[in-house]
Length: 109
Length: 120
Image 1 (cartoon, rainbow over the protein chains, first blue to last red):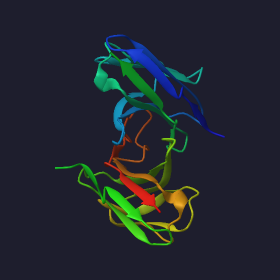
Image 2: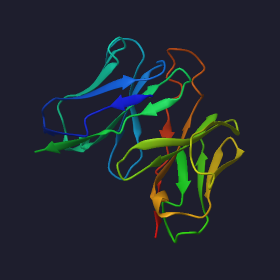
Image 3: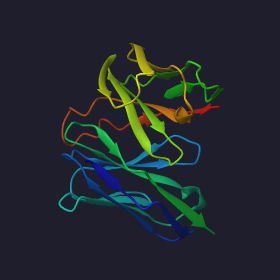
Image 4: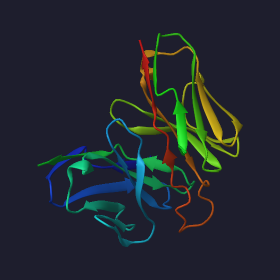
């Protein structure tokens, strides 16, 4: 079967750095997405990785290792508004998105 | 100028009723989706339409029937509502189904605000 694993919840301090991991086992791979979802709101697109390595976008970076079936989202200079759930999703060989259950990130002052 | 809109935002109804949720996108996208997000926040795809044609139909009860009158609209009709149908339903759209090429981020999905359905 297809599986995406992420920690259920993480806590970090304002101004710090946090890394949210995602491991996947899917039938084929055609890209990995990270989405942010604030409580009571819709998911919004953050990043996309299809080749190995680090993609940087401002305070957020996303890393991919296809051989290890592993990705992480790195958030720097954490702000209170970063408190949200972060969803990892993988596009499989049929170009369908397989979603993880999300990681709830709690930021403390 | 909302990109993906859904109505209603909240829906409270009795078991056994029939209800519909409407979705419209003004992004000119070819593909639209319906997702269900339950209390555990797990986002599960239900249906996907590309240019008004059904391309994904996951294992959902046949009480759920999507209808796409045109490629900008994908409505969800639910018959004989059950308690377990209570969830947030998200509509989403994307430019294409991802067949455009390996490096394309083409099927980045844009989500509507969600419809919180409560069945009593």
